Each structure stands twice: as structure tokens, then as C-alpha cells.
Image: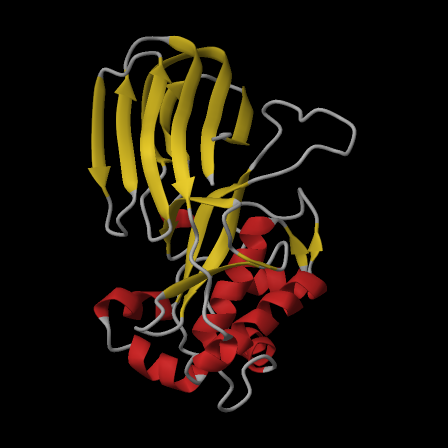
Length: 288
């Protein structure tokens, strides 16, 4: 599936901003099953300095500074993405989860994803919750699918009850939140068992209400979790918010240990006062 992606972020300030420095994860990455055909990041006002780099996790980053006074700051991503997500193996073809945990901690590319991070730190309650899906000797993919299903069933999707700093421990207590919270709970649960898991930011294709046209800009950024299931099969992505294995309807933007590693846009400004934020996202299939 080929998609045309448009993601606009606009800050409107009550007073002029006289200096702004911003750090972004807004350019989508290539990965197995996903190829970026082209991508462009347009920024207004025009930055005085702009630096494009690749971070520790292999994500594209953009750092800019703007020194001209401005009351609006706008970042617009336009990209064409080809997604052909490979099908995962049958669960019974995967190793027991204990074998995966033993192997993962010894490999540089997976070891850091076994360890706690600020928003996805295991605790005894999270470990107990995870253990219900990972009985002794169970194939890793069978356990993952069960955990994905349970989080979907146990959680209630509610906007406004959490924030970008909410931890997995808090999520387990309240069992409510948004996609970021679902992902952090799954990641922390897997790490509690020594299994590597990472946070993935991106987009999910949505559909209009039957009989109505799709509203432009109404799509949203999304987040999910990925788990390593062994050297033979690599990483498999799970969307606990929707009880899905990630498929051709998900577009990956970036990944890291938790949200803090892949925050789309953060920075420091001088001036501005109160502000409003507008985010518009469109993910549309390209007819071929």
C-alpha cells in the first residue's frame, strides 16, 4: 500500500516569540516493510539554522533555531510512503519466551530495550500482570498476542486523563488513557519478564463514517509497541489500543525506549506568552 502523508503542526502565540529552538522527530524512517519514496519538512518562519541528523535509534531528527520575531510557528511534513508489512510467523513456530529473554540481554541491538526507561519502568504489579500471558514454555508470539488482547480488553480509552509524562505504573492503576499509555503498559510488562520491547510512533489509516466523506486533517498520530521474537523473525509490532498486529495500515515514524525518545516536537522559546496548538494529519492511500 502506498500512502500520501500530510502532517501540519501550528503554534499561535499571543505575543511575539523572539527566539525559538526546536528539536523534531517528524521525518518518517525506512524499516523492513516500509520504504520512504520521498519526504519533505517545510518550516515557517524560515529557520536561521537547520541541522538534519540520525539519532542513536536510527530515527531522522531536525534541529532548528528561529531568531526573527514571530507569532505563528508552523511545521508541515509531506511524504509518500510504501508499506508492505511482512506477515508474522505462526505462534507455534516461535521460541519459548524464556529463550528469547536469555538471548536478548546478550545482544547489543536488543539489550537496551530490555531495561527500564522513564515512562516504561516495570514494577511488581506490572510483572504480575504480564505473567498471566507468559506461562512457562509458552511460545513468545502466543504470549504477545494474549497480552495485546488483554490490554485492549482491560483498558478504557479516555482522552485528557493522562499526559505525556504518565508512567506505565500509573496506567496500570487507572486502566485508562490514550494510545501512548497502552503502548507504555505493554512495553513495561514485557520488560518485567526480560523481553525487549520498544515504543513506536507513527500513523494509522482511518476510515470515514459510512455514507459521509472523510474530514480533511482529522487523522491523528498514533503509537504502539514492538517486541523482538528472536533472530530468525526479528521485531513484530503490536497495537494494543486496537488489539491489532501492525499491518499495512500503519506507517512508522520513529522508535525508541518510550515516548520521550521520539517526541515529535519539543524546544525552548523566549517570549510568546499563551499559545494554542493545532495539529492536522491526513494519511491517504494512493490509487495505482
